[in-house]
Image 1 (cartoon, rainbow, N blue to C red):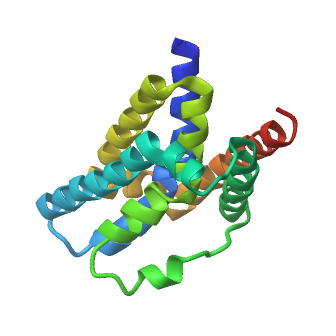
Image 2 (image 1 turned 90 degrees about the vertical axis):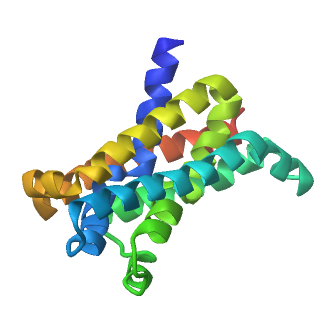
Image 3 (image 1 turned 135 degrees about the vertical axis):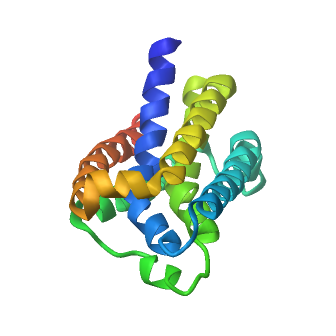
Amino acid sequence: MILDLIKAYFSIFVVMDTLGNLPIFFTFMKSVAEKKRKEVALQTIYIAGAVLLVFLFFGHRVLSFFNVDFQSFKIAGGIIVLIFGLKLVIGLKILESRFKTYRTAMVPLATPLITGPATITTIMIFVYQYGLLLTLLASVLNLFTAYLFLSRAENLNRILGRQGSDALSKIMGLILTAIAVGFIKQGLFP
């Protein structure tokens, strides 16, 4: 169980890409006081957590409502996760230009960046793979980790810099791409 929790935690961590999202959060919040930045980070995690929990608990009902079998969902979800992984590896700018029009980082960062299609897909697959309790625990730990990172965005941005953050994001993208291929294989060859 501990090994499964570690696997689930790190997989979700890679999919959420909190380190890669730090520069986006910092860009939105650089002119905001540190206290307000922490408040926005907490609100961001609340929104991301709410979206994540809805799909964690009710995602399977959504699939059955639309008569989507889980193998098809794994393949479709694997393709989405693959696109996000490739985005990180080769540096595609999907959706990011649209975020410049938002006044705070809460909505674009909470969803779709932290809890977007790739995260939702991953947790729904993990509920089937690892069970509800373990996936819930891994998800909550990731939300806590994301809050720690976002609330210390200025310090981490200073340490990592844009290049360091981009390099980590590319490494995570490669891992994410491998996870996506695994999802697709599981869907094709159950």
